[in-house]
Image (cartoon, rainbow, N blue to C red):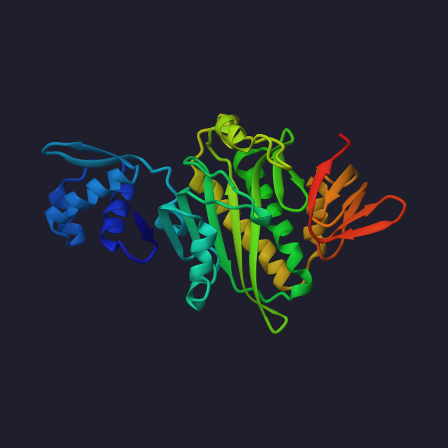
Amino acid sequence: MNYNSFDNTGLVKVLTFLKTHNTEYLSGQDLSDVLHISRVAIWKHIKKIQELGYTVESKQKIGYKLIENSDLLLPWEITSNLKTKIIGQKAYYFDTTDSTQNQALKMAGDSTNDGAVITASKQTSGRGRSGRKWISPKGGIWLSVILQPKFDISIATLFPIASALALSIALEKIFSIKPKLKWPNDLTIKEKKIAGMLVDASLESNKIEKLVLGVGINFNVNVKQIEKSLKGTQNFYGAYSISDQKKNIKPISLVQSFLVELEKVYELLNAKQTKNIIDEWTLRSSTIGKEVEINTGDVKIKGKAIKIDDEGALIVENDKTHRIIAGDVIHLSK
């Protein structure tokens, strides 16, 4: 079951009309007359709308009434009244896919997909950084964003940090919570992971041709299931679900807020205005000021995390100063 934001016009017309008249029942004939769609087509669209998780009450000889919106990240829900210029103005939805990142990479060659968002209800082969497995059951927010940036390679390493900051700000606005940012791209609550970022970039002649951001958020997931699957995995430090906040908020509210904040930091990066991003990230960081151990893949470095530099690299000091572009961080001190 796949959808996008520019097809399915009949279904979206019916759904939009139900939304704008959700205080009353609308007969099939009324919908047919107003929307110029046959009554048979109206009935089929209503059935499909219900299958997509919308609660539509149906009363014989009276009509249809929309009671509640779907929890699915459907493309027309993402684009509806989204306050961005590029990011999220085009969207695709997959009920099940291997990974939204793989789908996005296939679509990234099409210049019309600049800013497009790809979501999935479930991923069968979700992946994290360094080729690690990302457990992504139903109930989570799994999405990727295709971008054609103007910023150069020198600050590309700052992009996942900026993206994590954008999600942190969105979570603060929607849930009134303050997650911590763990270098390079994790978000945590109570020192357990709630979200992570993955970036794939395509380079040509020292220029970023396209960039795909993958985002995984534990929105309403079974934490015990995730922890059981990943127990004993290197660098796994626990999982936390946003639903533990006990707030009745639809995932679409968080996604739209994130896309707005993402475009803000994206525009700052394109304009090479990075200081505010670095300052805001540092304020929220759980890494800066800690004694840490960094595994770069080649070596392990222990020391105190001092700051991130203008390109997002982590500066660690022991008997000398180390500049670390990529690696896994273990916090040694509280």
